[in-house]
Length: 200
Image (cartoon, rainbow, N blue to C red; front, side):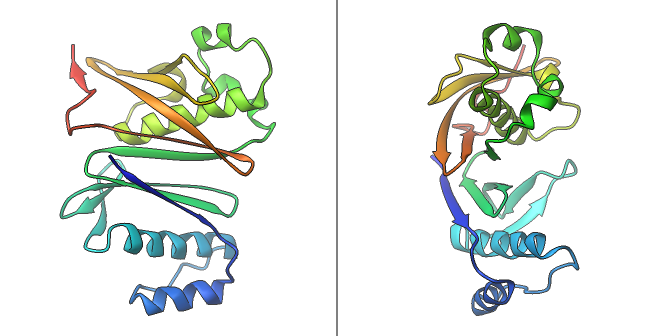
C-alpha cells in the first residue's frame, strides 16, 4: 500500500543544490563530508517528490512521520538512497552486500536463527539484518534490539517472516526483498494503524 523511490546519486553537490532550489527547498546543509551533504539534499528532494503536501516531523524516539498525515522511512547505502511513504507505519532498509557482516553477526543473530543459517552466506546474513532493520523502523519505539526482540523465520531470496516481541506487544510481518546492484532492499508496513501490533 506504500510507495518506494530509489535514487542512485551521481550528481555533483552543486547540481543537487540547484535542483533543491528549483523546488523551493532549503539548500543549506551542515558542514559534513560531501557524501553526507548529498544525502541530506537528496532526502529533501525525495520527500518533496513523494509527499509534496507534507512536512517531516520527528517523534521523541527519532522516528520520522509526515504531517499532517502519513508515514515515511529513509535508508541509504553508499551513494544509493531510498524513501518509503505510506498512510501507515512503514520501514525500509537498504544494505550493501559486504563481508564485514560476518564479523558483526553476533550482534543481531539469535540462537534460533543461527541454527538454520547453515553456511557463511553473506547474502543470507544481509537479508536477515535488513529485514530486522525494516521491522525496527516500522515499530519505531525505544528499547528494542535486533538480536533479542526481532526474530526471522522462513528466510529465502525473495522474502521472510519477521516477528517483533516487546513485552506484551507482538508484531509479525512478511518482508519482501529486492536486489539493487550489489545491495538488498527490505521493506514492510502495517496494513492499518493497529494491524500486527497486539497486546497479549
